[in-house]
Image 1 (cartoon, rainbow over the protein chains, first blue to last red):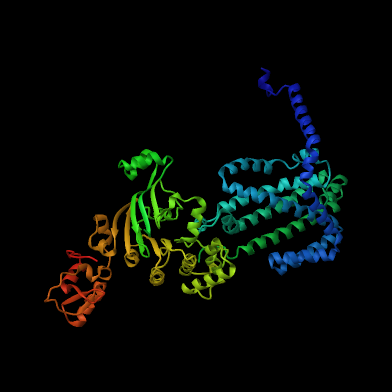
Image 2 (cartoon, rainbow over the protein chains, first blue to last red):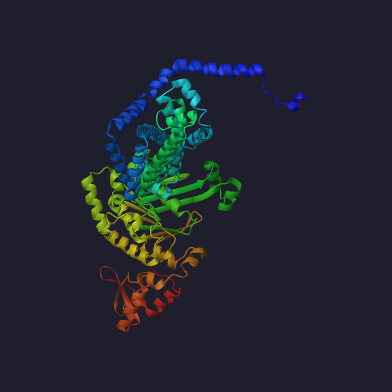
Length: 294
Length: 344
């Protein structure tokens, strides 16, 4: 009665062959197509490197003021702008400026890429139920799969460094923007869409002048979530050699450096709060006139 | 032939429209259709000749199919079978591109819940149809400005819809539709969401504009008072079929069945009926003041009282006597006792 005590597992040798086959197959695939795939991501890498250079080569005070200006533009709140100034200053004061800028470059690149990839997919999902049923399970897997797991194929394909790091971040951060673009467009008032059709608007005009503007608050909520996911993943991506605030965290874990870990962690928290509040305030501001009713 | 003709139009919401249509043509009713074919009967055998440059009202209670009907005219809904002719051209044969052109230049629509774009200002909302038509910015500005003024919203150009009252929002909806210069105006319960006073106000605005613009208007409503007030022609819809068609006088004086009789029971007849609808033949002995044929009964009564007469001569536009009314006939008509002799 051994089958009752033990789970009827796959045979040891067969399992090993399967493992070897898949690993070997993927390795071969990597050798054959790795460079092609890598060149496909060249624009992302180019943007990341140059944006990072820009942030690091510009005098810190200019960067600090520009960031405060952006926050003010987005939120129109002096309180938040002052908080941003103090927060960023503290990051620099505790010697985290360079890593913080690298992280900022990563997040910006990842968010921008996620928007460029995510919004068209979200639009397609909103247009067709079939596309939606195709993408939904994929998004579910992407969001529930432990982030460490998809670091593995990324490392195998791209090795160690900036590019695998940013790609892992993008994969992790893209689902919310896709989902919320889809949701936002599906929630647009049917009567307004009918009005757009009744006036003879083309599909493109309807998309750009009615659906996207009306879905924008929801899409902005997606962007906000995407940014937050990117921030969370930036630390994990340090495992595959991504630069930024994740690196000191990793070092601190290895060497049990409490102060280093906490200050890097605090820098991430400060960045997260600034970006979150600014993007939410912006989202709220653009929907000032959108509520229906009288 | 201009105007809008709808010919034997059927709409059945069904998985298998052809089978369901056959069943309806063989006389199956609404509830059986739902039971046996799991299909909803939207419209059956609709035939309407809508007058050019006039106001055609389609009246019915909710679920009667009136909103479905109006959406066939610009083909927001595809029919199961039938024809919709606008200026002799069948809307249902148009390609997608032709249909877009048709909607952009020939028809304009006003919606019950306004359906304005909440992220655009009043002016920008009014310009929406003009953008679709591909007009230059300066021309758009000029035209939208003109129509904003005409509907009485001057000074509100830069407001957002959420900052306006319901009545004002619908003025924007009306200006948006009128700005396109389309000949056909489709109004889907356009004033139903408004307070009674504002509704009357908007009816006045529309009637006044219509005097000058002479558009072909299709007006959907569930309110008989509204229908009688503005309709040159009225079609009453019930369960997707037309019960009666005619002008306001026909419907009040000659209701087609008990359903309509019930409907018109509570109407203020004195305010809707015209003297030429109830007048008797004039003879040489007819005396009294002259009353124009399109005067309503309440006004006629007042004229008679002021002249201290019991009889009046009814005249036409040329001033010729065409009939006679007496106070007795007027009173009988007000309490539904009159035998109709002639109509307009």
